[in-house]
Image (cartoon, rainbow, N blue to C red; front, top):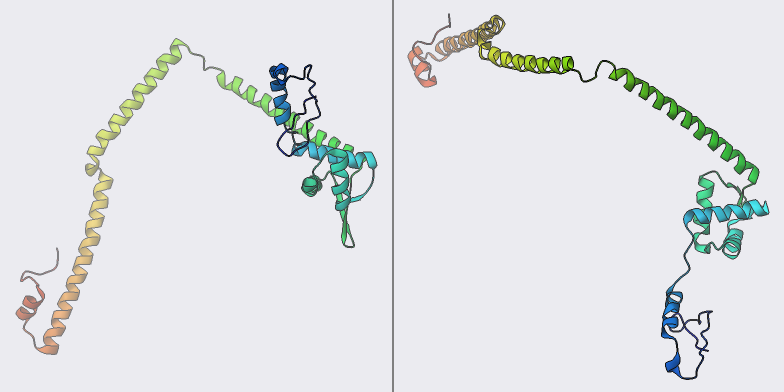
Amino acid sequence: MLVLFENEGQQPINQPVYLSSHNPSDVNCSHLLSLLPICRSKKKGLSAEEKRTRMMEIFFETKDVFQLKDMEKIAPREKGITAMSVKEVLQSLVDDGMVDSERIGTSNYFWAFPSKALHARKRKLETLSTQFSEGNEKKENLQQSIKRAKIGRHDTEERASLSKELASLQQQKEQLKAELEKYKECDPEVIEEIRQANKVAKDAANRWTDNIFAIKSWAKRKFGFEESKIDKNFGIPEDFDYID
């Protein structure tokens, strides 16, 4: 009998290989090679959903109340759930309302009964059924809206002609808008706006002229300066006056 090991230092695989001859050269190599995947393969772990399902089976089958330390012993032994993941899986079930939890004293207790799970599934089914019905109703309304929208929109010669005419008119509109923009300065409204702006500017300029004349008059009285010297020092032109 030839004994195969998965890896060095590990336990031998459970499948023995019997040799029909004491001569090693007589060993069926192809048969040995077929066993290599067995040697290399590892047991596939449980998915998160499988762990949740198996943990719920513990509650439903026993109809008992457990502490976390109890589940950390029972789940690996009876359902193949690793002890390290028990707390996380149990908390996810509590968060989803599938398992009840209550703190009594210093300990947390967990339980779940089939009757509650059944009612929860019924409520979920009713909610999904309502959503499904609403979805079907919306779908039907949309289909009806599409049908109504298609009325009178079939491709016909008349529709094609009107579409072409519309495109031409839209192009003419854009051309006219561009042409109108060129003569915008001659628009009476635009001219009136310019006139009003000029009046505001003229009034402002004359107010500052008043201010300058007032300062010149004050300087002449206060310091006895001649007007020509004031104009020269401050860059005031000789013909400085109000705007008519």
